Length: 208
Image 1 (tube, helix red, strand yellow):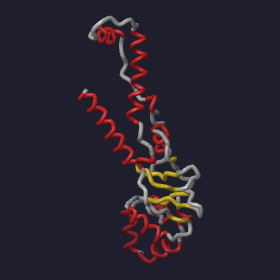
Image 2 (tube, helix red, strand yellow):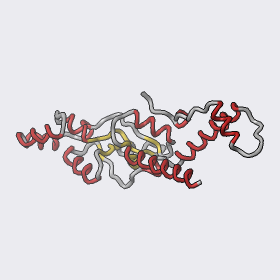
Image 3 (spheres, rainbow, N blue to C red):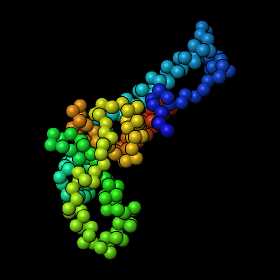
Image 4 (cartoon, rainbow, N blue to C red):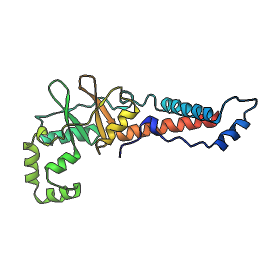
């Protein structure tokens, strides 16, 4: 099921009775019909949502300063770089810096034929030499996920929602117009920013 777009976020349904009661509370005479009132509400709702979501772009929310992987890198070295990045995966780029894939913890499990990290640990304790050999000899290009779901720097709220819905991962690469890697957009950072923006908007309404 696709996530709702900005213009599909549900409005509170207004009955004619609600509208008439609200109009009575406004001093003076209002020469509009209940349908006119409902249309004004609809347009105001959409503008409020657009204002709320403005600024929630990958360019503002991404984490920069990450060094991507290359396809010829051995998986053991790739693992060290992913751990050092503080994330769960890193994109893989070609010689021009364009994103061609992504390597995550899930890719390691799949390549090492384990269903969970607990299973991987137990098998590693049993046969450490085998795992060391596989990680040293296997290249990133042979284990990465491709094609990768990426997002543009200036993508809007709807596009970010669609992209995250396309894959189960916790993050996705942010790319420039030429497809070159510039940062990572984490799902948790996007949701945290959305939550903060929503709270700020509600607080402003209460204060007003």
